[in-house]
Length: 158
Image 1: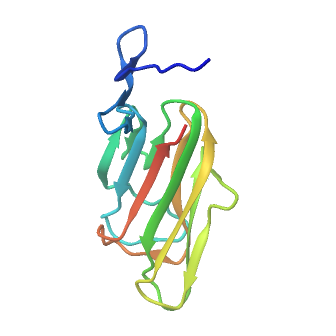
Image 2: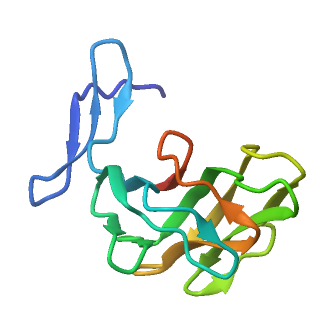
Image 3: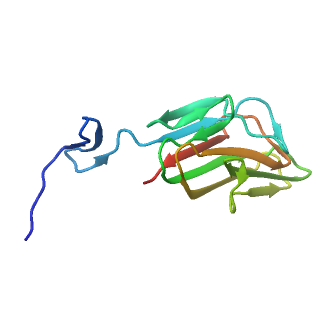
């Protein structure tokens, strides 16, 4: 037996729209948690947390906490997290790592060596619980302060 279900919007019993399908067949999720922030406040050296000086975009309840320099998950699920930064160091290694609830996440560290203004970045898929938070730390060297080259992000996949 086959059937076709024709709907444009799926809502919960309270009336909140969770999913829409447009006339081209694209599924839109208007309340998916996401956040992206940039760093603009000075070069950050080893042993320091990267600052979230500008909230580039956020929604779906994800908190970009600029006071504590972290992003906080509003719901449990599988998230993509990551960053891109610019190394500001020619004499040593520059490394950045991601931390979940204050603890370094295995496989979340990346580094470069030997070139001023070299790009470094990383991303991971990770399961987060409600109120888990992600932070970014400089492990070695110095990260440049140009906001055109620096950002951190977290978004729910499912």
